[in-house]
Length: 384
Ligand SMILES: Nc1ncnc2c1ncn2[C@@H]1O[C@H](COP(=O)(O)OP(=O)(O)O)[C@@H](O)[C@H]1O
Ligand SMILES: [Mg+2]
Image (cartoon, rainbow, N blue to C red; front, side, top):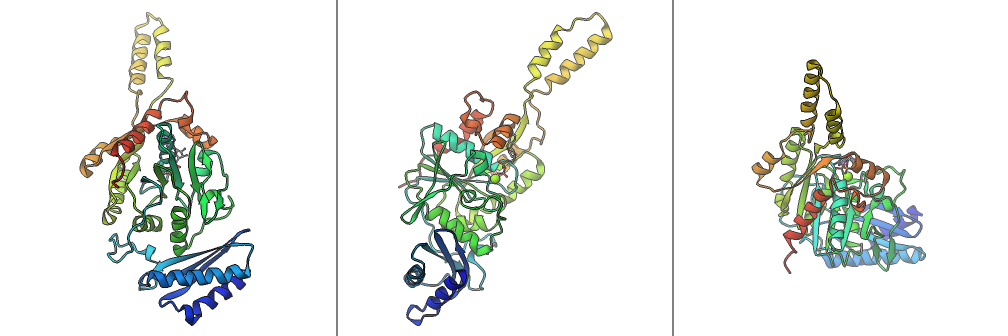
């Protein structure tokens, strides 16, 4: 079937009546039970009308041969040197890029980012989105970690989205519109995206999805500064990025480097969230009370008790990973939006797919997520 689609697609590409200068190749063909997706690589300089005409012709030709499938054509820009445009990583915005697009019907778009993996982006993205929703905002949560989507397991659902007309409708999970590539692919399928595919998939998740009606869209980003970042920063209007980091020196050095990615694209970094900042030992108060009950006249034992009490008192809030975030914030002139403690309950909730913010009994960290949500609310809406 792929072979036949390829033949038809190349037939249209080579058809003089739809000649499109700069079209390079069919870069990918994907077939599912009901959708055929063909990705073509075209030079950025092509005029939009010619491009749409070519896409329409290709869609019609493939549709005629496979009437039971929905056919989707994705054009991916390639630069003049033949590389996909999204693979440029000079850290400089290209002045000839097409203008950024707004996600239709969404007031605010926030990226939850970090230079490193495993610092808690997905945890922060999910629980901040839930905190916003609890404050009465309508919220969308988009997982753009194409290589390691973790939102499905964090929300405890992998409900596939439905398609209405030409748009994907994200499922409503915990009162939010939630979408992850993890809802659409086989869990065990290795996630090996070729460079140009990344841009195609991201554009689809942003612009071929019905996000309308959401006040705020929170985007859970992958770690690092690769293709996903460049595609998003080049193509979509974003209000701000929120950087998540742990307070260790190494993580902060990476965070500092990470900040530079946004500037050329005029995306402000709103502030920093410090995760796994402190460890608060819950049993501490109980142990102190138990020590109070120990009565002894033995001076050596009294000394030991006193030492034990002092040691326990210093465990109130341990900074396991260091205490460097505030100085980084000062240096970068960025606000420290919230400090989230390391908490076994949060880890357990993540593992069991029952979001921390939804449990009314767990208040330890909820105030930190509420702080992030309030920060977003207080930044206000984009003009117009
Ligand atoms: N404050 C925290 N306390 C305890 N565990 C946490 C905390 N934040 C994140 N985790 C755990 O750390 C791991 C990485 O978090 P995750 O949100 O997936 O990070 P990232 O998206 O940056 O890769 C997960 O197992 C998560 O449950
Ligand atoms: Mg993640």
